[in-house]
Length: 168
Image (tube, rainbow, N blue to C red):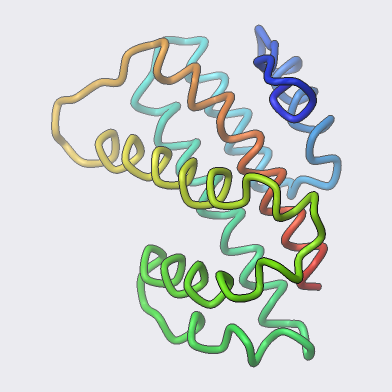
């Protein structure tokens, strides 16, 4: 697994994919998991556009769950108040990232490790593929690219849930 030595996650069907997710993110939200499982099912059926869109939806849903957690927190709500005023998800994310940057040193080491890669980098890749798939561009991702996205979403989710623990 990525988290413990750089190896890829291994899964071959919806059940093994769910198992890989639950090992890394035991308390994954049910709605998020539904979209992730749907992505794997679409991938196995050869519906790569659908798989890509579902992965993007799951990633964005998880970020919104993080924001909900922060907004409900009396301790952290004011620090990130400007995020909630933004209209689009991308604007919210960019504002969140900017507000988080000066706070990174205070985060636990496990959360700080590869934070920018897992938060910004992976979300950017997922959003790009989701946007290409969700708009009628005619661009269909390669099967291998989609498989990589199925893998990348796992460490992204794990990092989001680590942040949820910090900002509860």
